[in-house]
Length: 290
Ligand SMILES: [Zn+2]
Ligand SMILES: [Zn+2]
Image 1: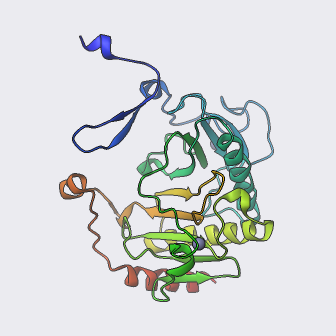
Image 2: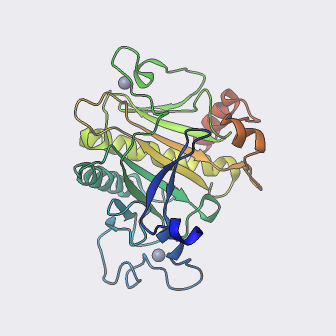
Image 3: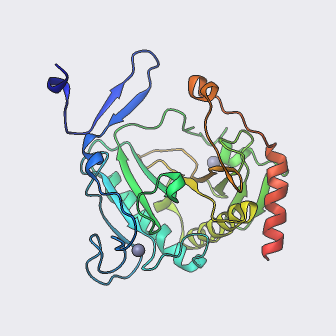
């Protein structure tokens, strides 16, 4: 009975009780858990047999979605966004943009999700800093598709929550963050995807990313495990506003953020620190770092 219903190809399932969509991806359980010696992403490793110029992209051999998952290795060493120079991060942003456009051109791809799980606590199975791209057949339901009149990226800039402003980017704490230590990088210009950014805007985004990650690290005095994703929209006529979200997964230097039953049940989040206080803390950490 059970065996008949088991399928090996990834598929999207809908829960009748909540309407929630869940990807069932059985093949991913076969992917290796890497620990100790022998990094698969360092030159000479299983996924990078030859020396390479970083960053580099390759197809994920254990894709959550068949044929539409890529891995981008950020560097030929283990430097991450907290230690890489903005120039090196800029090259990662360029590759994100290039591969987003590549995956976005495949049939039935409605959304190219660029994301990074930083650290084992955040779900990374390989320690070597890397991000991933998923070509999704659906657009995430809670992603706002701003129009030019009422775009949240163009209109809602609260000075109390803004932690850094440059010519091309703004770094801010969201008014309703998913976790206490959350920041969002928003481009000053209304642009809907990474590929639409000018080189000077990509450089500014890379710089903002470097300072934002260093600030999160500074808040907890250790590399902050985080979930990063790029909110972008590639379809023709898209009106979304590009943003990079960074959700820190610690609530204090030693305590991991765990979701409670009330949060799982309702989809609501409860945060113990006022976002205005977090913004003040982030500004103070950034000032110290200068
Ligand atoms: Zn490595
Ligand atoms: Zn906008």
